Length: 292
Image (cartoon, rainbow, N blue to C red):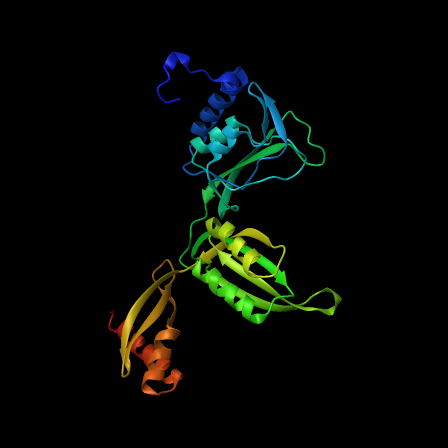
């Protein structure tokens, strides 16, 4: 619409009375609630087509898709429009973040029922209002984590090891493989990938491309992690980095020397690995005692 005079701009369906009521009442309700953060689960946008003043359009409508931006979406259930441009505009206006239900203390809740009948499932929108659960001195920070799982029985160990390397290089937090007994007595491997939700599409593609699996599943869960920091200590064989995990109170929860540093010194000086690790922990303990 760049360069179009204001008097030539019109809103089509967006200017309808019901749409204006939706937007004004939503804005008033949001202001009334006084919350400072909005979250939602991934969005079921529906499927099929919808008829409007511009003709028959695919679902989600182009305007809906543009307004949703990079919000996580999926299509499930009977073919129908489940998110309109108005709803997408409201979500964009609120700067909604997406993920699993965060740790919170629910103060109140509400339900809004739509006028359309959806057989087999409620046509409802639920709103929870609460306070984010405060972390105590013995708890860590809670964040969303994506868990991707594939069960495989026809890939070689070399292929799975290579795929694990690629997943880690692409940003996965962790990749682990578990042996399991599958149907018909076959032995299989379950590959589990832990990652940030925004990396999930790229890591799913790696799994499908690099292994023989033809399907996988994923979920969004909550992850709690203590704050971590690193400190270098001196041993008789050289410098070793120590990883420290702390409670929010600042108290040390755990401290361990980095394996790769200890391994390199053990090989270089032909000494037992455990001796290097013990020396690193003794040096760290002395550092803590002196208050660093």
